[in-house]
Length: 163
Length: 299
Image 1 (cartoon, rainbow over the protein chains, first blue to last red):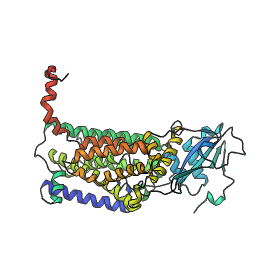
Image 2: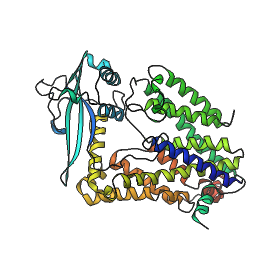
Image 3: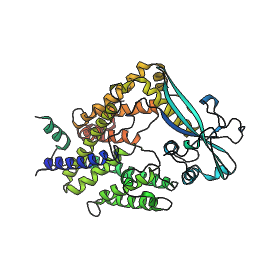
Image 4: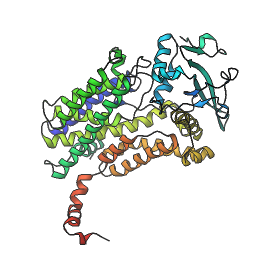
């Protein structure tokens, strides 16, 4: 077998392994990938951000709002050393907010911050409206205070403990 | 000449001996891979120390419980091991399968780091290049065969990756994927990520153009998916430099329109997509002439 024949054979074998791994793992088996990101266009999305609401009146903290009316001060993920995509996916993909999951998020953000500050975890939901606009809603979701975590009282408990 | 033969010759064909320029070029490319592997192993390892829970297991973590990498210093030990083994492999010290061990260890590092929801792709090309070295060094013993195989194999998977990205979009959404309003939705999504990361957010010029014109936004998406679709043209030597520039341009456009950076992708594309050794051979006398006789430099 000459060099090119051997190269092609190795390429085909690797391609079979590549294909088997991505086919059985939803297109992703690092570094093998079919690059499926952005394949589903137009779907609503959910992201997350944090605001420091220490000085926001209690009557306002649980209101769903838009960007211009967001309460509190921004908390930069970069400044606190947290990967924004990690944080956002952690919040948006968690279905059941049990004690372990809440503790993991508090640890990720940094428990020390909550000694003197109250932080609100916002879910941010975007979707296309009609033919010519995008709506983005900022939904207060979890409040981290010293030694306590609060759920949004406007939501049913099932919102936090989905199957 | 049929298409299969053309692809074979363009990916794996070449001279029977390596020129000194090719040797230097090959080691520069390998150093690029070495740098990325070591940098990623520590970057991921240090961040993994913050992780205490698994939200979305990836890769091998779907089969085995990767939590043994959390809550201890194993990610740092793994990064140290990867660093030492990568340097040994770079200097060809030890058995030919060291890069394969590094590849497996780096996969563990990746799945330990990315187990909480994010599926990033920014390190995929360096990862695939590492895979090329891992396979190439095991299968081939002669330098010239390793050179031709590793570069050809890397280029094959780059072309395949871009093509599969375009097909994913066509299968996932269909031809309407290019509708400019989809870009609006992504701009809002990525803008939210920037707002959360930095605390503030401003639209770029490209984003403003897209948000003010559906046809402009549609054109941007069309150019993006079309460039991905013709990605396999990188398999052919004649079209390789042009498609490389187009892909780099596409990544630059993605950065401007969606705030997503693919620095390592762009660097690897420029490294591997351009005929650097051939250019060096062609212009060697001109370049060296500038140093030996500065009067030849056009002023």
